[in-house]
Image (cartoon, rainbow, N blue to C red; front, side, top):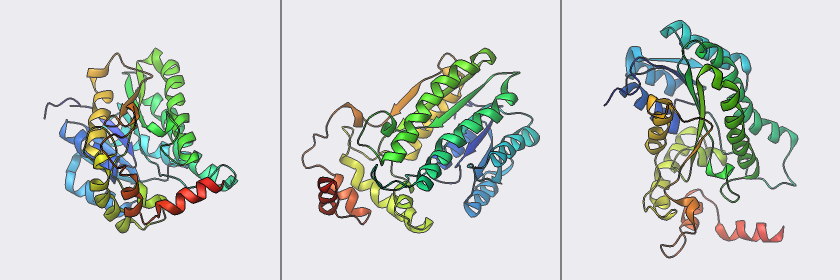
Length: 287
Protein backbone atom coordinates (compact mmCIF):
# COMPACT_ATOMS: atom_id res chain seq x y z
CA UNK A 1 0.00 0.00 0.00
CA UNK A 2 1.03 3.62 -0.46
CA UNK A 3 1.12 4.70 3.19
CA UNK A 4 -1.40 7.48 2.64
CA UNK A 5 -2.17 7.60 6.37
CA UNK A 6 1.32 6.94 7.72
CA UNK A 7 1.70 8.41 11.19
CA UNK A 8 -1.99 9.24 11.51
CA UNK A 9 -4.21 8.24 14.44
CA UNK A 10 -7.87 7.45 13.83
CA UNK A 11 -10.93 6.62 15.89
CA UNK A 12 -13.67 4.62 14.18
CA UNK A 13 -17.11 4.06 15.68
CA UNK A 14 -18.88 0.90 14.62
CA UNK A 15 -15.49 -0.39 13.53
CA UNK A 16 -15.95 -4.07 14.39
CA UNK A 17 -18.09 -5.07 11.41
CA UNK A 18 -19.27 -4.09 7.94
CA UNK A 19 -18.06 -0.80 6.49
CA UNK A 20 -16.34 0.11 9.75
CA UNK A 21 -14.30 -3.08 9.86
CA UNK A 22 -13.26 -2.76 6.22
CA UNK A 23 -12.19 0.82 6.87
CA UNK A 24 -10.18 -0.06 9.99
CA UNK A 25 -8.32 -2.75 8.08
CA UNK A 26 -7.54 -0.37 5.22
CA UNK A 27 -6.52 2.40 7.62
CA UNK A 28 -3.96 0.06 9.16
CA UNK A 29 -2.72 -1.02 5.73
CA UNK A 30 -2.21 2.65 4.87
CA UNK A 31 -0.11 3.21 7.99
CA UNK A 32 -2.60 4.53 10.55
CA UNK A 33 -3.09 3.48 14.15
CA UNK A 34 -6.73 3.03 15.05
CA UNK A 35 -9.05 2.96 18.05
CA UNK A 36 -12.18 0.89 17.39
CA UNK A 37 -15.26 1.94 19.36
CA UNK A 38 -18.03 -0.63 19.22
CA UNK A 39 -20.37 -2.78 21.32
CA UNK A 40 -19.50 -6.07 19.59
CA UNK A 41 -16.77 -7.03 22.02
CA UNK A 42 -15.97 -10.44 20.53
CA UNK A 43 -15.42 -9.01 17.06
CA UNK A 44 -13.58 -5.94 18.30
CA UNK A 45 -11.22 -7.89 20.52
CA UNK A 46 -10.46 -10.35 17.72
CA UNK A 47 -9.57 -7.44 15.45
CA UNK A 48 -7.31 -5.99 18.12
CA UNK A 49 -5.53 -9.32 18.42
CA UNK A 50 -5.25 -9.85 14.66
CA UNK A 51 -4.04 -6.34 13.79
CA UNK A 52 -1.62 -6.03 16.69
CA UNK A 53 -0.23 -2.85 18.17
CA UNK A 54 -1.79 -0.69 15.47
CA UNK A 55 -5.29 -1.20 16.91
CA UNK A 56 -6.94 -0.69 20.28
CA UNK A 57 -10.53 -1.71 21.01
CA UNK A 58 -12.87 0.00 23.45
CA UNK A 59 -16.43 -0.97 24.33
CA UNK A 60 -18.53 2.09 23.58
CA UNK A 61 -22.23 2.86 23.26
CA UNK A 62 -22.06 5.92 21.03
CA UNK A 63 -25.50 7.09 22.14
CA UNK A 64 -23.75 8.00 25.42
CA UNK A 65 -21.58 11.10 25.17
CA UNK A 66 -19.20 9.85 27.86
CA UNK A 67 -18.43 6.73 25.82
CA UNK A 68 -17.67 8.80 22.72
CA UNK A 69 -15.34 11.04 24.72
CA UNK A 70 -13.62 8.02 26.24
CA UNK A 71 -12.90 6.60 22.79
CA UNK A 72 -11.40 9.90 21.59
CA UNK A 73 -9.36 10.18 24.76
CA UNK A 74 -8.05 6.63 24.35
CA UNK A 75 -6.65 7.56 20.94
CA UNK A 76 -4.78 10.48 22.48
CA UNK A 77 -3.53 8.40 25.42
CA UNK A 78 -2.53 5.30 23.47
CA UNK A 79 -1.13 6.92 20.34
CA UNK A 80 -0.40 10.53 21.26
CA UNK A 81 -3.18 12.34 19.45
CA UNK A 82 -6.11 12.12 17.07
CA UNK A 83 -5.97 13.02 13.38
CA UNK A 84 -9.02 11.24 11.96
CA UNK A 85 -12.52 10.64 13.30
CA UNK A 86 -14.79 8.30 11.38
CA UNK A 87 -18.39 8.43 12.66
CA UNK A 88 -19.68 5.17 11.26
CA UNK A 89 -21.85 3.47 13.90
CA UNK A 90 -25.46 3.06 12.83
CA UNK A 91 -28.35 0.77 11.98
CA UNK A 92 -31.16 0.65 9.46
CA UNK A 93 -33.79 1.61 12.00
CA UNK A 94 -37.36 0.32 12.18
CA UNK A 95 -39.35 -0.29 8.98
CA UNK A 96 -41.99 2.25 9.99
CA UNK A 97 -44.31 4.75 8.35
CA UNK A 98 -44.64 8.34 9.55
CA UNK A 99 -47.88 7.66 11.40
CA UNK A 100 -46.58 4.63 13.30
CA UNK A 101 -43.24 5.96 14.59
CA UNK A 102 -43.01 6.14 18.38
CA UNK A 103 -41.14 8.77 20.36
CA UNK A 104 -38.84 6.04 21.66
CA UNK A 105 -38.11 4.80 18.14
CA UNK A 106 -37.45 8.33 16.92
CA UNK A 107 -35.03 9.09 19.75
CA UNK A 108 -33.24 5.77 19.31
CA UNK A 109 -32.44 6.36 15.64
CA UNK A 110 -31.53 10.02 16.05
CA UNK A 111 -29.29 9.33 19.04
CA UNK A 112 -27.43 6.54 17.25
CA UNK A 113 -26.81 8.49 14.08
CA UNK A 114 -27.02 12.25 14.63
CA UNK A 115 -26.27 12.67 18.34
CA UNK A 116 -23.34 10.23 18.15
CA UNK A 117 -21.82 12.00 15.15
CA UNK A 118 -22.27 15.40 16.78
CA UNK A 119 -20.58 14.40 20.03
CA UNK A 120 -17.84 12.65 18.08
CA UNK A 121 -17.05 15.97 16.44
CA UNK A 122 -17.32 17.80 19.76
CA UNK A 123 -14.74 15.63 21.49
CA UNK A 124 -12.44 15.06 18.52
CA UNK A 125 -12.09 18.74 17.63
CA UNK A 126 -10.08 19.80 20.72
CA UNK A 127 -7.60 17.01 19.98
CA UNK A 128 -7.21 18.19 16.38
CA UNK A 129 -6.96 21.96 16.85
CA UNK A 130 -3.19 22.15 17.05
CA UNK A 131 -2.38 20.19 13.87
CA UNK A 132 -5.70 20.02 12.02
CA UNK A 133 -7.53 16.84 11.19
CA UNK A 134 -10.27 15.10 9.25
CA UNK A 135 -13.77 14.06 10.27
CA UNK A 136 -15.74 11.66 8.08
CA UNK A 137 -19.26 10.42 8.83
CA UNK A 138 -21.35 7.73 7.19
CA UNK A 139 -24.48 9.24 5.70
CA UNK A 140 -26.42 7.57 2.86
CA UNK A 141 -28.07 8.16 -0.49
CA UNK A 142 -31.24 7.85 1.61
CA UNK A 143 -30.30 11.22 3.09
CA UNK A 144 -30.15 12.78 -0.37
CA UNK A 145 -33.22 11.36 -2.08
CA UNK A 146 -36.50 9.76 -1.05
CA UNK A 147 -37.12 6.06 -1.48
CA UNK A 148 -33.83 4.50 -0.41
CA UNK A 149 -34.54 3.76 3.25
CA UNK A 150 -37.05 3.82 6.12
CA UNK A 151 -38.27 7.25 7.17
CA UNK A 152 -36.28 7.61 10.39
CA UNK A 153 -33.07 6.34 8.81
CA UNK A 154 -33.50 8.69 5.86
CA UNK A 155 -34.15 11.73 8.06
CA UNK A 156 -31.17 10.89 10.29
CA UNK A 157 -28.84 10.56 7.32
CA UNK A 158 -30.08 13.85 5.87
CA UNK A 159 -29.28 15.44 9.23
CA UNK A 160 -25.75 14.03 9.12
CA UNK A 161 -25.21 15.57 5.69
CA UNK A 162 -26.27 19.00 6.94
CA UNK A 163 -24.32 18.57 10.18
CA UNK A 164 -21.29 17.89 8.00
CA UNK A 165 -21.73 21.16 6.11
CA UNK A 166 -22.31 23.29 9.20
CA UNK A 167 -19.41 21.73 11.13
CA UNK A 168 -17.14 22.13 8.10
CA UNK A 169 -17.57 25.90 8.33
CA UNK A 170 -17.24 26.09 12.10
CA UNK A 171 -14.11 23.91 12.31
CA UNK A 172 -12.34 25.30 9.23
CA UNK A 173 -10.32 27.90 11.21
CA UNK A 174 -8.39 25.02 12.81
CA UNK A 175 -7.91 23.24 9.47
CA UNK A 176 -10.28 20.48 10.54
CA UNK A 177 -12.00 19.15 7.44
CA UNK A 178 -15.48 17.62 7.78
CA UNK A 179 -16.98 15.39 5.09
CA UNK A 180 -19.30 12.42 4.77
CA UNK A 181 -19.80 9.42 2.51
CA UNK A 182 -23.19 8.47 1.07
CA UNK A 183 -23.24 4.73 0.33
CA UNK A 184 -25.83 3.20 -1.95
CA UNK A 185 -26.87 -0.45 -1.73
CA UNK A 186 -23.99 -2.07 0.16
CA UNK A 187 -24.15 -5.71 1.24
CA UNK A 188 -23.72 -5.50 5.01
CA UNK A 189 -25.43 -6.86 8.12
CA UNK A 190 -27.34 -3.59 8.56
CA UNK A 191 -30.22 -5.05 6.54
CA UNK A 192 -30.60 -8.11 8.74
CA UNK A 193 -30.23 -6.12 11.95
CA UNK A 194 -33.04 -3.82 10.81
CA UNK A 195 -35.27 -6.90 10.85
CA UNK A 196 -34.11 -7.90 14.32
CA UNK A 197 -31.82 -10.71 13.18
CA UNK A 198 -29.10 -11.89 15.54
CA UNK A 199 -25.52 -11.03 14.58
CA UNK A 200 -24.62 -14.37 12.99
CA UNK A 201 -27.81 -14.54 10.94
CA UNK A 202 -27.44 -10.90 9.87
CA UNK A 203 -23.91 -11.68 8.64
CA UNK A 204 -25.28 -14.60 6.61
CA UNK A 205 -27.96 -12.36 5.13
CA UNK A 206 -25.27 -9.88 4.06
CA UNK A 207 -23.41 -12.57 2.14
CA UNK A 208 -26.63 -13.65 0.40
CA UNK A 209 -27.41 -10.05 -0.51
CA UNK A 210 -24.19 -9.71 -2.49
CA UNK A 211 -25.72 -11.72 -5.33
CA UNK A 212 -29.19 -10.19 -5.05
CA UNK A 213 -27.76 -6.65 -5.20
CA UNK A 214 -25.71 -7.16 -8.35
CA UNK A 215 -28.34 -5.58 -10.58
CA UNK A 216 -29.68 -2.81 -8.36
CA UNK A 217 -27.49 -0.08 -9.85
CA UNK A 218 -26.08 0.60 -13.34
CA UNK A 219 -22.71 -0.89 -12.39
CA UNK A 220 -23.66 -4.54 -12.30
CA UNK A 221 -22.08 -5.79 -9.12
CA UNK A 222 -22.90 -5.54 -5.46
CA UNK A 223 -21.50 -2.63 -3.51
CA UNK A 224 -19.07 -3.88 -0.85
CA UNK A 225 -17.78 -2.38 2.40
CA UNK A 226 -14.35 -2.06 0.82
CA UNK A 227 -15.78 0.33 -1.79
CA UNK A 228 -16.87 2.71 0.95
CA UNK A 229 -13.59 2.29 2.83
CA UNK A 230 -11.68 3.61 -0.18
CA UNK A 231 -13.82 6.75 -0.21
CA UNK A 232 -13.26 7.27 3.50
CA UNK A 233 -9.50 6.91 3.07
CA UNK A 234 -9.53 9.55 0.35
CA UNK A 235 -11.48 12.04 2.48
CA UNK A 236 -9.29 11.33 5.52
CA UNK A 237 -6.00 11.64 3.64
CA UNK A 238 -3.97 14.62 2.49
CA UNK A 239 -5.18 13.93 -1.05
CA UNK A 240 -8.40 15.67 0.04
CA UNK A 241 -6.71 18.54 1.86
CA UNK A 242 -8.88 21.12 0.04
CA UNK A 243 -12.12 19.14 0.37
CA UNK A 244 -14.54 19.96 3.18
CA UNK A 245 -18.30 20.07 3.61
CA UNK A 246 -18.67 17.44 0.89
CA UNK A 247 -21.06 14.48 0.68
CA UNK A 248 -19.28 11.84 -1.42
CA UNK A 249 -21.78 9.54 -3.14
CA UNK A 250 -20.53 5.97 -3.60
CA UNK A 251 -23.45 4.07 -5.09
CA UNK A 252 -22.49 2.46 -8.41
CA UNK A 253 -24.77 4.93 -10.18
CA UNK A 254 -27.87 4.03 -8.15
CA UNK A 255 -29.05 7.63 -7.84
CA UNK A 256 -28.33 8.47 -11.49
CA UNK A 257 -31.53 6.96 -12.80
CA UNK A 258 -33.82 3.93 -12.82
CA UNK A 259 -32.58 0.39 -12.95
CA UNK A 260 -32.43 -0.66 -16.60
CA UNK A 261 -31.08 -4.21 -16.78
CA UNK A 262 -34.47 -5.87 -17.23
CA UNK A 263 -36.62 -7.11 -14.37
CA UNK A 264 -36.02 -5.17 -11.17
CA UNK A 265 -33.94 -7.11 -8.61
CA UNK A 266 -35.48 -5.42 -5.58
CA UNK A 267 -37.92 -8.32 -5.18
CA UNK A 268 -34.95 -10.71 -4.90
CA UNK A 269 -33.40 -8.53 -2.20
CA UNK A 270 -36.61 -8.55 -0.18
CA UNK A 271 -36.86 -12.33 -0.51
CA UNK A 272 -33.34 -12.78 0.86
CA UNK A 273 -34.45 -10.72 3.86
CA UNK A 274 -37.49 -12.97 4.36
CA UNK A 275 -39.99 -10.33 3.21
CA UNK A 276 -42.80 -10.78 0.69
CA UNK A 277 -42.68 -7.96 -1.89
CA UNK A 278 -46.40 -8.36 -2.59
CA UNK A 279 -47.29 -7.93 1.08
CA UNK A 280 -45.13 -4.80 1.38
CA UNK A 281 -46.66 -3.30 -1.76
CA UNK A 282 -50.16 -4.02 -0.51
CA UNK A 283 -49.35 -2.41 2.83
CA UNK A 284 -47.97 0.72 1.18
CA UNK A 285 -50.94 0.98 -1.20
CA UNK A 286 -53.44 0.59 1.64
CA UNK A 287 -51.95 3.61 3.32
